[in-house]
Length: 129
Image 1 (tube, rainbow, N blue to C red):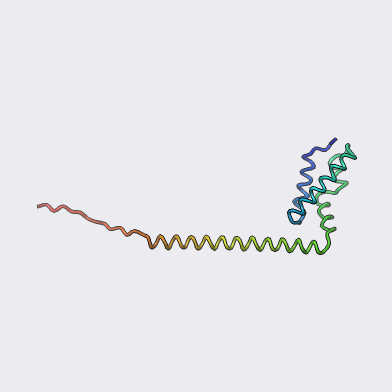
Image 2: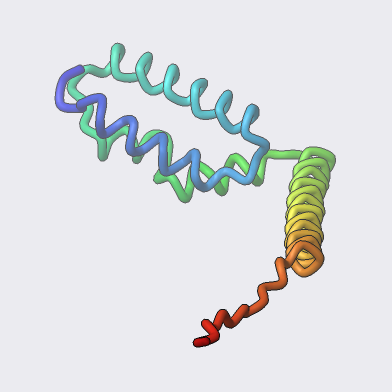
């Protein structure tokens, strides 16, 4: 691979992966396609450095920005809607969990109040006769 090591490519791809606001499956496919393209580019141009790769494909910011700009309005709306639904599902799930925890706590407290054992002090005295 010439002057580029695998770790540099992975770091570059990881940064792009972080910046793409896409569903997980689609994001993974974009990054895999880009990785394949980079590897093919390196095969054809073995003396390239990572800086040359970044110039050819763009920095992670540039690549992500250009990819987002290339999406049509329908894709962007779908992505935003999916993220909104995911956030709502997480919030509802957390609310149900918290409510369930509160109900369980109250149930335990009430049960313990009803099951409390009353203790009595018994004084034993010896009568001296």
